[in-house]
Image 1 (cartoon, rainbow, N blue to C red):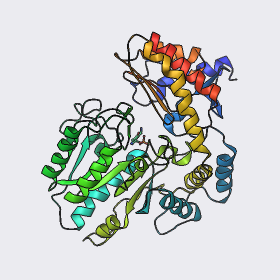
Image 2: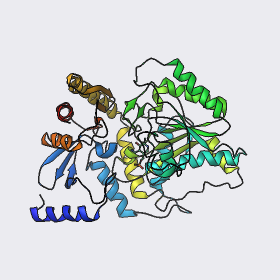
Image 3: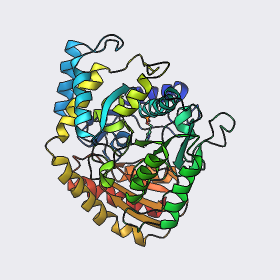
Image 4: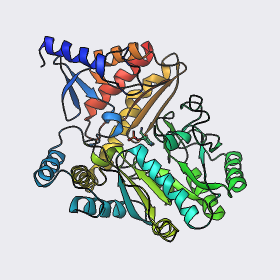
Length: 430
Ligand code: PMP
C-alpha cells in the first residue's frame, strides 16, 4: 500500500502533467492509482482490490503476472531487449510470425509486425493502396466500410471509423472521404436481411473502380458500439470483393485470439481475408505489438511494382521482448483450454446478466463468447457508474450507452458472477 502522502503527491502530479486517453488536460475526473496487478485483480494504491472485467482494453486474456509470460519477458530481456529490424532479424520475431501464419485462416502467408493496432490498420490500408498502384490501377484509392465500426485513432483508420460515433465532424476536410454502407443488422443469430445484402453488394459493385479495399471488424463491432452480426455478411463481402476485384481486410484487433469463441472471428464465416490485422491480446496485454498479415498475392503485387517495397518501417518493429511474450501468450492458447474457459464465461455472463433485461432503461442485453453487454436507452453517467462498480469491487469502463465486460479468460465463475452482478446493479444507477 502506498503511503497517503505519496498517493496524494502522485495524483497531483498526474493531474498537472499526464494526459490520459480521450480526456481533457487537466483531467476533470481523477483516475484510480494502480500499484500492482495479479491474476484478474488490480491492487490500488489505497490497498483495495478490483476484479478487472476489462482485460486492460481487451488485451490481458491470461490475466496479469502470468508466470509463462513473465518468464518469456525476463528470459528475453536477459538476451536482448531490442535490435533494429532493418537488415537484422531474430528468433522471437521469426517464431512469432511463423506461428501466426500457422494459426490464422489458410492463405495468409506474410506478416508485418508493427507497434499498435492503429498502425497495423495503417499498414493494412497502405498495403491495399500500394497493391493497386503497383498493379497499374492507381484510381483504386478508396475504402468501403460499414457504419458502426472502429479501427483506431490515427488518421486513415479514423476515416473508416463510424462517422457518427467517431470524430468525423471534428476532422471534416482532413480525413480522406471513404464509402460507407449502413451498419450490419444486429444480432449474431438474427436471420440474414436480403435487402441489406443487396445494398452492400450494389455499393461494392458501383464503387469497384475506385475501391482499393473493404475493411470491417468481423462478427463484433467493438469500440463503435459492441454490436454483433451474422457471419453470413462476411461471406457476402468475400464473394462480392472477389468478383469485383477489391481487397478484403478484417480488423481482428479486438476479436482475435478467442474472444468470440472462435480463435479468429473469420472462422465463424469460414472466410480468409486478403489482409488481417491483429493486436491487443497478441502479447497477452503485456507490451504493445500488432501484426498485419497478407496473402502471397498481395505481397507479390506490391513487390512487382515500380517501388517494389512496402514503404513502412517503425523503429521498434519486431521488438524481441514483445515478440517473445506474444509467442508465449499464443502458446498458452495452444492446448485449447481457452475454448472451455470462453464458453464457461459465456454461460456465466448469460446467467448473470439475465436480470438486466428487467431493469428500467435497459434496451438490450447481449453476450457472445467472453463479451457481455448491457445497453441503456441513455448515456451512462460515468461518475455514478464508476462509483457503483468500484464499490462492488469491480473495474469496468463503460462508454456511451454501454456497460460491458471482456474479462480475462482465467476469470473464475465467482469473478464472472461478481462482474455480472455489478453490471446489473450499475444499470440501475447509471
Ligand atoms: N481496431 C479495433 C477493432 C480496435 O478495437 C482497436 C482498439 N480498440 C484498434 C483498431 C486500435 O488499436 P490500438 O488502440 O492498439 O491502436
